[in-house]
Length: 476
Ligand SMILES: Cc1cc2nc3c(=O)[nH]c(=O)nc-3n(C[C@H](O)[C@H](O)[C@H](O)COP(=O)(O)OP(=O)(O)OC[C@H]3O[C@@H](n4cnc5c(N)ncnc54)[C@H](O)[C@@H]3O)c2cc1C
Image (cartoon, rainbow, N blue to C red; front, side):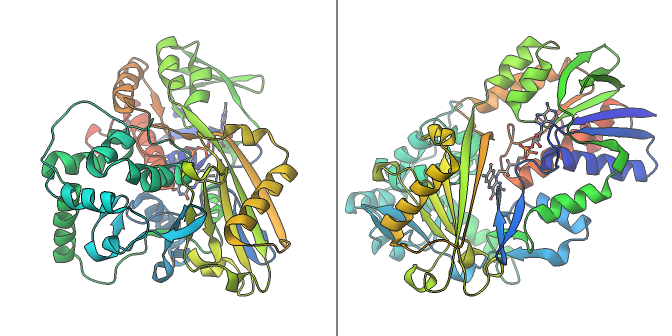
């Protein structure tokens, strides 16, 4: 009987455990133990219910075009619980000189897919519109050099587009800084488009033509989620695992590699395993691997993380009519505010708020403003309410408020990230049986984490001779 340890019970570790459980039930002779430091599973995925509304502490949904999270939900029997975002009402604003200006229709991240909405948009100056038109003639560029997202976008569309769109999108969603993030790791599709077509505009149009020819049926929603919140996925996943295999309140403190296996130390006890999946943030993986491989620990520690706060406020009757339609807004750095972004939950997922409620979820922290995490919850709420008053004119008392702090939870793929992953891959290969999963490597969203957990489980099975190599992908 082969034994596998999984360290970390967020969605990456749970996905790994579920894959192992499926093989175990299929007759593969294995045992697994999942070590989770806290008293609950799910990591940053956590849902609460307040006043008839669904309040997400961490992720509220996932991108539909990445299939792995929805596939997992289907495998868990949650297909009828999957819901799409209300795309008929999709409109996102950028705060510009204190006013909310809509992102023009038909933008794919920073690439315009339609001309007229951009021409009439108040978001961009005439010079940027001219640069968007000129981008059409950008010639293909082949370079092995990585660069920042800001440099890449600026080369195509100029600095105003970086400041008003690319940077707010990355900081609002991932707490990132476009001048630090790697374009090849964060926006690989756009880097490929540049290599193949030169112009991103032309590449997007060509891809769109292909999709129109290939697709049938109604368009899919941009975001997918679960009716009762993201925690539904965690709860059902946990219920499918072998209960005695789950150790809560069991932070792994140390690892030892013995050539033919691993020794895991947690809460004063040591246990031997044939294989090991580390599904914690990379900075934690670095700490527990320090005595096994200093070089690997250095590489893992080199992956930066940012911290964030989500603050959700629920309002009653009267507030809804005073708010603009749409999913919410993003705040460029130049506005000089602490708020990074806000989601109008009642519009994005209408069934998550009762009809007479308004639910606004605000994002703070990120690379711009880590210090805010030090503030007391009351002080954070004072800042949130003041900024919402100034931006949206909301003076009403909220019916409920919730503040969640996520310390060093969001990996940032800095320039050179892919080269770092190659080095990690080589170092990991020197430690048979070790697999890594999580948001530090090849995708930060929930679907990527689900995928990374599954891949890590398959690598572990392969390392123990319980799975054929053809079925296994060997990243990171
Ligand atoms: C505020 C916020 C909003 C987000 N919004 C979205 C979104 O809308 N859509 C989307 O797709 N993604 C979103 N993300 C990103 C996504 O949710 C995360 O990348 C993903 O959930 C991370 O999962 P994970 O399992 O890799 O890590 P985590 O959830 O961080 O889990 C790691 C687990 O490891 C445990 N652990 C740590 N150290 C040890 C140890 N020594 N021993 C044992 N256990 C340990 C921790 O307690 C934790 O439970 C968001 C993230 C945040 C923080």
